[in-house]
Each structure stands twice: as structure tokens, then as C-alpha cells.
Image (cartoon, rainbow, N blue to C red; front, side, top):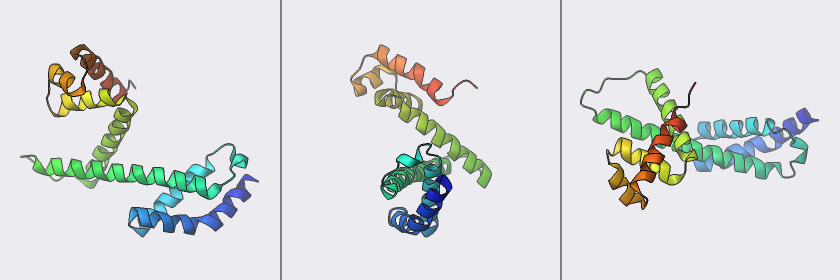
Length: 161
């Protein structure tokens, strides 16, 4: 039954979903990848028999995947821009760039799971070099609260193995 549902839904909706994602992604190949990934997530849903509007669900999944795709692209672009501005820039291999971007995406996702002020405090501290008092003023919290935010953030980004 599950196999039949997925097979039927794929035949009826894949082309439509890929075309919809093409309008968002701007590239046919990226759109096909996003549509395929949406079907993979659909296939992983345990209670598939409860799905009443598969196209609506596929659209929701695909849009979330598209936003993650854009976020990843932005992170990659910012990373490459920052790397190019470094005085001793060396040409990183495609594998090194891919690994670095993967790590940035993972850290970005971890920071987004924190409260907004905690993530912002960590970034202001680490990348802007601001002190706790300056961060506290910007965020409208106490310096001791900033310290708590910053202490918690690395645990979210680099959990113990």
C-alpha cells in the first residue's frame, strides 16, 4: 500500500513539483534535486495513510528545502568572499571548500536553534570582537546574561562526541 501510494504520487506530482521549484530555485537541475529530496522526505513519513493532500505537503517540504538551499548558498558565498579577502589566500581544493561549507551550515543550524539573542551574542563576540558590555547594550540585556549566552553557544555548535 505504501509503495503504491508513493509510486502513484511520484508519477502524478514529480513533474509538477519540479516545475514549481524551478520558479523558486531558478535552475532546472536544482529544482529536480529539490523535488527529489521532497519525495525522499515524503517517503520517510511513518503515517503516510494520514496524508490527505500530498501536493500541499510536498509543496511545504520543498519550500523548506529551498529555503535551506538558499541559506546554504548564502553561507557558501560569504565564506568564499571572506576567504578571498584573506592576505594569504591559498586555493582550497573543492573538497576542502565543500567540507568547510558543510561545517558552516551545521554551525549555522546549531546557532539558529538557540534563542535569537544567544546566537547574536555569540556572533558579536566571536566575529565582531565586541565585549560583554557592548553586546549587552546592543541586545538590551545585562552583561551577565551575555556571558551565559556565550558560554552556552559553543556547546550547541560543537557538542561532545
